[in-house]
Image (cartoon, rainbow, N blue to C red; front, side):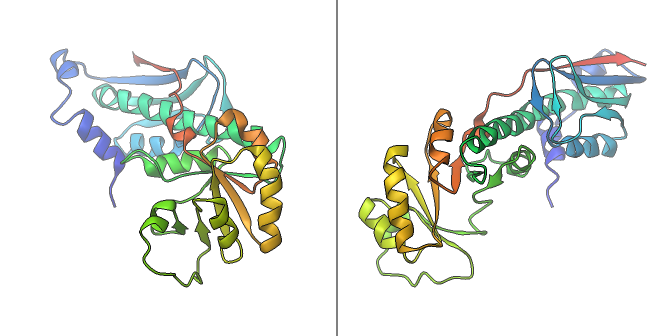
Length: 263
């Protein structure tokens, strides 16, 4: 199993910390990572495990899923100063990204559930290479779910698949079958045999009449919608079961700062 934090450290410090070694910094110190804005804590346990693995003591951290405010210290650790300097930038960058994803997810879920308490907000598999494990975890912490973790965990017949299929396929499977129709006609044709339809490029007004028509063909059919602006989430949530989005992965990183002091 790949240890991603070891990979991040090797990438950022492949041969040693030139500055800390040049300044001959030794002894023990403490690092405090503070937020300049409101957010939701995520993957704190993963970062803490990385610190402990490197011989540092985690003094304090905000629990996953808890919210924090500007000027709050969200992570604090102490120990060998040269080690702290090696882990400093990785830590701050990591938390700025995962906490931002959790925050964006929570905001989106809360917005969607104002108009549909049962709606599920699920993120796509368009994660950043090498960061999927933590992006998916941050989404869950923020109250969202996963549309697909990988190609291996579900069946999604996309428009590209439909473009190259040469024969009709028996759609019975152990897993739910999701289809992304290219046209209204394909959606009507797929509704009786699909478990889920992923509809793109429909307005909320169009879905208001089209979704009941599709469900009349299959009472168990679930409807997902993707490719929408987050400002429209509440409008779409009224008519569907799932909102599929990539937006949380690309949320602006939170503004964090770190202070290192000698003990």
